[in-house]
Length: 61
Figure 1 (tube, helix red, strand yellow):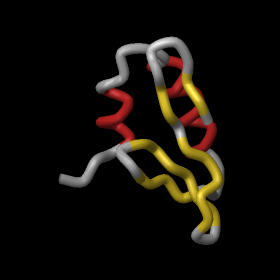
Figure 2 (cartoon, one colour):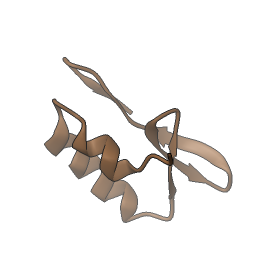
Figure 3 (tube, one colour):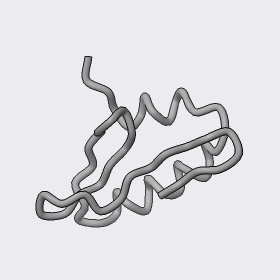
Figure 4 (tube, one colour):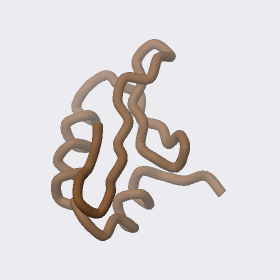
């Protein structure tokens, strides 16, 4: 089953609103949105630029 960024956001117990803001910002750019390693990943010209990871006490770009 192919995962989606929407599914990733749905299952986040913490940081949902903060991650949504970041996803909206990334979607306004020319970055390609993909899911790699079950996490949102944004790439440019085939190179990974940003990946999002959320933990209980923090989130990481």
